[in-house]
Image (cartoon, rainbow, N blue to C red; front, side, top):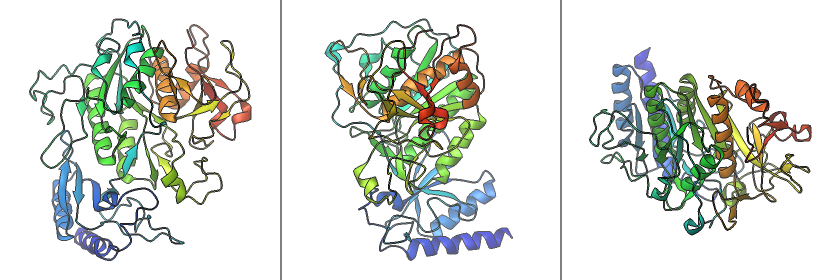
Length: 454
């Protein structure tokens, strides 16, 4: 039976590889052709199956282009011509043959999609006007918040408490393939010859820095540690393989420390689901790690291919925004709410999803009330600077989740987390409210805002 499966796998790959070259380079709907020339593969755990899989990939004309240094089972394979063919209906030339990342025989295989941060372009973080927060003393067992983004500028060194890899001293003492991963890592340069670098503090776009600042602002004096992991470049873009490898790295480090963890994912991609990403999210759920993801913003290229009448409703779209459009107990998805009026005592009224951001009562768990219209004032700036995007709603929710975990919630499950946030059992503080008028836009109409004091 195994021999038949492997033969079928080889034939299927050959068909997909050879018969769909013509249309797979079409990029009018968003992703470039690189995504379809590269396959993310989770290798089987059985050595014999893994060897057979490698042989099948090579016979199909593919070659390995990168391996996740901290988990050799996660690999990237590629070819000169598209691996994934196109068979989309009505002239849609993006849908890969067999679905986006459907398992082929023993293979768990997905296109290496381009990912991006859903945020307004052109924002700046004016360092001349920054006012650092006061941070409390952090215990070694404090919650670890992995900010998987564009890095963390070294000007924030005195602002946030860094996670420290106690098993690393500058070489590769913990033998995870990364030399010098003492406080974080840069995964943007992964390749067949590079395992990345420790240059995570070179944040050209400042996106990850601002995301981290939102978290720090909400958690002043709270026990937590930031693990900055770089996957996005100066244009706030990256590749799914690098992101999954970074998530695997964070998972390993959090479980090794035997503490609670949250991953903030202020990025995503519009297309079909990825089994490689699905597998990663399952691993995180199994290891009791919470994931907070951005719901996504309007995107001209992605929206051009979308036939849904309401392109901001993730439930209606064909090409959804991932990882937001997954349903896992440990996955919390955040968007922004616009409010015409607000005050210190209320969440505001006339609430609605920001017109430029996604919503869904199937996928989106919570909305964050914006500071003005649908924009947020950037943290710690004396002169008010503002920007918008579900990128910034996510870290505010990440900080709220950290409060629940610090308050005693030990399950990476959104239900007990939201129960705690709805009413802190000790202080009675209400971090999360509900607006029934939003029930058709957000699960149970859940809402939150910045700056809620216990």
